[in-house]
Length: 265
Image 1 (cartoon, one colour):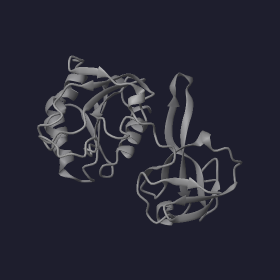
Image 2 (cartoon, one colour):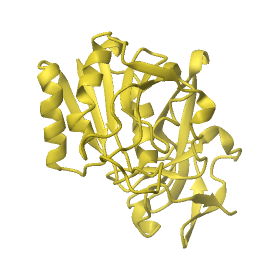
Image 3 (cartoon, one colour):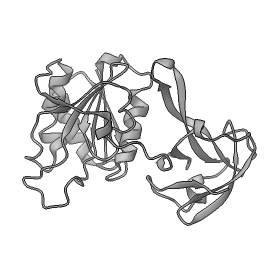
Image 4 (cartoon, helix red, strand yellow):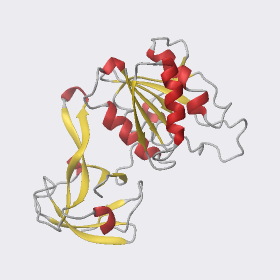
């Protein structure tokens, strides 16, 4: 079994080890891979759920994405018994199972690619560390085909759409992955454009391939992220800001995930 844990604990945080220990109690032979997203970033969480879940990987039926990013922003009032957003189960169109908290945009990228999307009947409170203390038994039940814990179905319209103009991720090279679909931009390759992120404005070149620009040029091009759109198999690709020989992230003043990206010319 292949389990990907996506959470906002922080890179190297022992919380990942604690959750891994609990999951291995139930799945002793599982391969567990960890992915840290920025604190409270449900957008980054949702992006990686889709990127990893909807693309090829180990046997789909034995693949679980276990995610936890629960900023507890669904209710601004004081929380009783550490209660937070509810747990959900999604069966993706390719058979991959997804178990995690329904918060913000965590389900937005996959909501149109599910065979089943339902609430899980487990406590919404009981621990400050629910992903360690409360949720693993639910994930175990799902992977063992025990669906008696499932609750009501969730409708697509109950889940927010992906915002169409945000930073989804910044990779280790400083490339800025956006939520802007490549199909939404109708430009000729090598067209000059101007991009704004926050207070920083920069010239860029639209390219149909990031390396088709000279050293030192900021490219706005279809990146490596995306997946096939439904039964048609048509690829969905997201645009990426790429500074050849440098860092687009540094060029734009080190912006954060979820900041708006605007083409102003």
